[in-house]
Image (cartoon, rainbow, N blue to C red; front, top):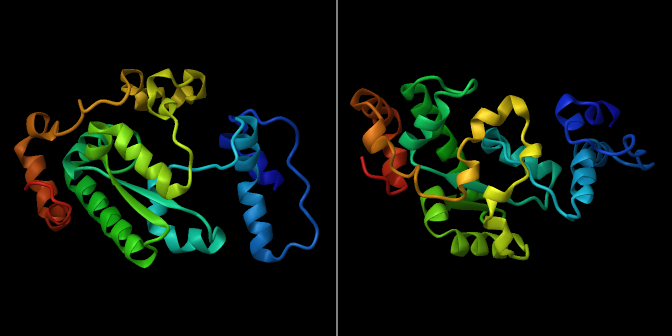
Length: 216
């Protein structure tokens, strides 16, 4: 628990006090869950929240493992056109660094997400990025209903997010945040992506694109 509490990422959350004492009598699975989630619970409490979440795309490849640790967890899979995703992720300092690799990475994630939803239909929810930004009120209300959360229109006001909560080293990843929820990044591949990159992505992710109803 102390090691997790001292992790550099966790320290940036500015939690008050030391790590909590481990309750006696925990089994292995319970102790592991307590250790991993203790800073999440502490941060949620500091924000006046009862529940916590974590947005990490790689979790798509560990859904069964996550549900083994947190049997009541709910997972939201956000799907976006592979070509727009490539335009967003290739310039970043992590992940795939070319269109072909981005297409393979995206297709693998989509397959895992669809498999997870088939295995756990009550706990895995798929949301389309394009529908979310086009009609955020309807989409977020639906997500909240599925997750058992109360809806508040403030959830949509991402342009009013506290900039102090963004790691300065990652600020360049969130340049669109101040613009709020917008459709500006939908379909940008049609004008901004070279034909050779488009062909590379469709060569490795065409079946998945078509299965999700995206034009190829």
